[in-house]
Amino acid sequence: MSDKAILTCALNGVLTDPRQHPMIPVTPEQMAASAREAYDAGAAIVHIHFRAQGEGVGHLPSWEPDVAAAAVDAIRAACPGIVINQTTGTVGPDISGPVACIKRTRPEIAACNAGSLNYLKLRSDGRWAWPPLLFDNPVSKVQGFLDAMAEAGSRPEFECFDVGIVRSVGLYVENGMATTAQYNFVMGVASGMPVDADLLALLLKYRRDGALWQTTLIGRTEIWPVHQRAAELGGMLRTGLEDTFYLPDGEKAKSNGALIEALAKCARNAGRSIASPEEARTIMNLGGSHHGEAGTGTA
Image (cartoon, rainbow, N blue to C red; front, side, top):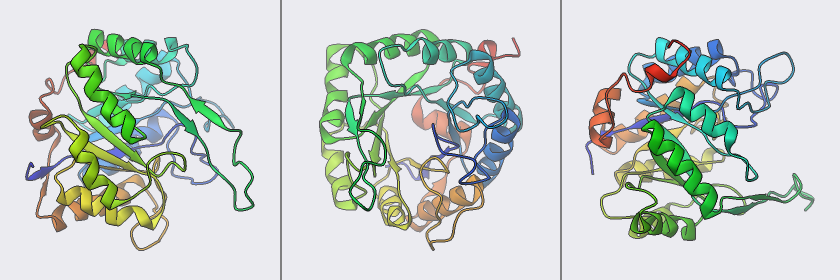
């Protein structure tokens, strides 16, 4: 366990709607300003999704490399040295958009969804909140992403929605598909792992020895005791408006910065200090702070 806690801000998510929360950042300028608030609060890493640009479409995702480059450039300019963690999640077999964005921006870390999940949610009356969806991540798709990440020099962070997916990551390494295992235990999707501190402690038995890990906790105030437990167990820590709109006291968070401040308090309550971006790179064995610059829109 490192005494230094690495904090990640999950800046905006894939479909979180600015009409539901006015501080969801969409434009490069908004993303840079929100990332700076999180950076000032202690975030060493920012996890980002790219959004369609233009009036009334900011709730939709974008895989335009120019949009990705503009967002990454703006964040790097606003937050010197911050580590970029970039989404790749997409439904269906066509991964050309995410791969093009990885090649353009060359993030130090890229999310790699490590297995498939029936992505389900119910309304209070028992009806589906959306049509039942298969978030498909077969091995061939995972391999395609890993190949693109290796070419760009990006570390895969394996997103794990269930215990079997956690175990699959070890198989990817043993098979030679991946050279490293860095885990993100995603808890709170209704058809995936629940937000449960007892389950979190068990999951650590099934990761590869010594592998870095963190949690993505989706929900309201019930997530914060599990954040605290993750801090006590030595994990990296992540929150942001992608994952929750709510602070530990139930108040609606006014910004990503406020959520990272609450997360930093969890780390300090566990006796851990907050890692700077350069300290995070050392702990994670990443490259230097100028990684990726040649692949952005400034080249």
